[in-house]
Amino acid sequence: MRAEPKRSAALAGPLVLAVLFVGGLYYVKWGPYYHRAFVAASQHSIGASLVSGKLATPPPPSVEAALGYAWAYGKSIWQAMVLGLLLGAGVQALVPRDWLVRVLGSMKFSRVALAGLISTAGMM
Image: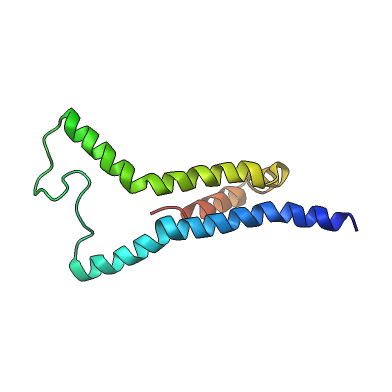
């Protein structure tokens, strides 16, 4: 009888992480890119460039242009960055280390392929 609460407690962490993974990626990546695909199909454009904004040509190289780009880029990716930090911390805190090493901790092709498949969900 004591083994049952331990097992459910051990499954709770990875389940919370999976919900954070799927929900967070939908909110930050999958949903916006899904909707942007329809905008691109109807308008034949994905919007203004981060480099040139609404200008026809990019600005000349300068510290001001670099800082402007860095600010625009930071505003466009901050949610994904926060999600990445939460997921990284969640893996360390919620997934048992021995399970992680057992599943992903070898250089066998199947383990590397599994890690690669898991990572593709977060790509753009």
